[in-house]
Amino acid sequence: MGYNEYAHTKHKINRLGFGGWQLGNTEFWGYMAIEDGVELVQHAIKRGINFFDTAPGYASGLSETILGMATKNLRSKVVINTKLGHTADGETDFSVYSLRKQIEDSLERLQTTYLDSVILHNPGFDILEGKTQHVQELKALKEEGLIRAFGVSIDTYEELDTVIHHLDVDVVEILFNIFFQEPAKLFKKAAKKGISLIAKVPLDSGWLTGKYDENSEFTGIRMRWDDQTIERRAQLVANLKEMTKEENLTKYAIAFILSFPEITAVIPGMRTIDQVNDHLANADFKLTQALKDQFIKLYETKIKDEPLPW
Ligand SMILES: NC(=O)c1ccc[n+]([C@@H]2O[C@H](COP(=O)([O-])OP(=O)(O)OC[C@H]3O[C@@H](n4cnc5c(N)ncnc54)[C@H](OP(=O)(O)O)[C@@H]3O)[C@@H](O)[C@H]2O)c1
Image (cartoon, rainbow, N blue to C red; front, side):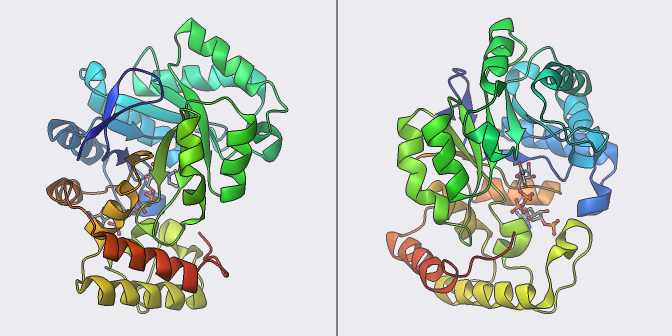
C-alpha cells in the first residue's frame, strides 16, 4: 500500500486512510452505536491505518467524539484531520474570528492538544481566491502549535484550479473517483505546489463497490438521488462489471485512485470491521494500465459532458 509524507508535517500516513463521516452517524448512514465506532477505529489502527478524517458537523460532533475516545491513548500513532465551517450544532460559520473557537471545540471532542490538520469544509470562492484573512489566521494558529497543517475540502476542477493559483495551503481534500475524474488534470500542478491531495468519496457513496443496482432503495444521506440518477449510475456500474468481469468493484475503485501517484491518501467511509478488513486485504491490488484506460474512457464518453450529481 505504501506511505506518504503528509502536508509538510513530517508524519507518514498510510495511503489507505479512514473516512469518518459514518462514525456514530445513524441519521445519515445507518445505525452505529458509540462503542461500535470506538471498536471500529481501534481495529483500523491495530491493522495499520493511521490517517483519520472527521468533521464537527459529522453526526453533530459524535464522529469527532468517537475518534477522540478511540485514540486518546494512541495519539502519537494517528494523524487526525478535521474541518472548519460547519459546526457540531449545525451552524455554518466561516468567519475568520471563529476559527480559533472552532478548533478549541474540536480539540475538546477529540481529547487532544493539537490537530495534525484542519481544512475549511467547502468554503466559498472568496476564500478560495485568497481574498480573505483565513490563511493568515490559520498560519498564526499553526505557529502557536494548535494545528500542524491546514487546507480546504473542495469538489470541482474549478475550485482546485482556483486554490492552486491563489491559496497557500498544505492539504486539499478533493472529490475524486471513477465517476468524478475532472480534477485529475490538475493533480500534477497541485503536487508541484507541495499540496497533499486526499481523495474523498472514493466509492461514489457506495456505488463503486458494485453492491447497488437500479432496484436498490436508499435511506439517509443517499436519499438524494432521483430515479433517473439511480438508473444512470446502475448502468455505469454494469459497464464497470463488464470491464472487470467481477461483481465486487471496491478494489478497482480504490486502486484507480491510488494509481495517480500525486494522491497522498484515499479515505473510504468505513462502517464495519469487515469493510476495514476488505480494504486492507486488497491494499496492494494494482490496476492494469489497460483497465485504467477503460475507466478513463468510460468517464470521457459517458459522464464528462453530463456530469453526475453528487
Ligand atoms: N465535504 C467534505 O469534506 C466531504 C464530503 C463527503 C465525504 N467526505 C469524507 O470522505 C469520506 C468518504 O466519503 P463517503 O463516506 O461520503 O463515501 P464513500 O467512501 O465513497 O462511500 C462510503 C460507503 O461505501 C460503502 N463501503 C465502504 N467500504 C466498503 C467495503 N469494503 N465493502 C462494501 N461497501 C463499502 C459503505 O456503504 P454502506 O453504508 O452501504 O455499508 C460506506 O458507507 C467520508 O467518510 C468523509 O470522511 C468529506
